[in-house]
Length: 127
Image (tube, rainbow, N blue to C red):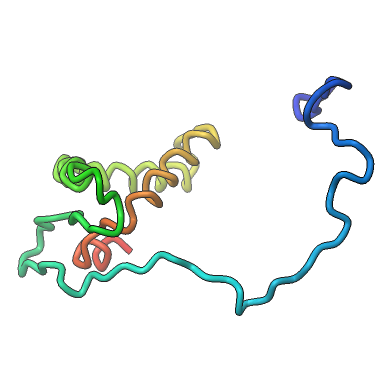
């Protein structure tokens, strides 16, 4: 048995009864697809220096009930956390670091979840 084989118990919940699943699929098209990630960063402060002063800013539309998230991510950035993330992916790319897919997924998921909080200055420098 290969490590990718899946054993399912006959009484398992993954096995569905006949004719209980959908038999028709519809192509919804582009007019029904909507991305609700709207970030208004026009009012973000821009500092005229080479060092980034603020990595994230508290936005009322994202993590509105947790005001300390932006503060924690700013501390992460001040301690060179984002530079370590870039170094992490560089080392994976050149083959000097081997890691699991779950580890990579957790780092990418962290970045995607805090993406709306990034300031305009930080996004311009790191993207």
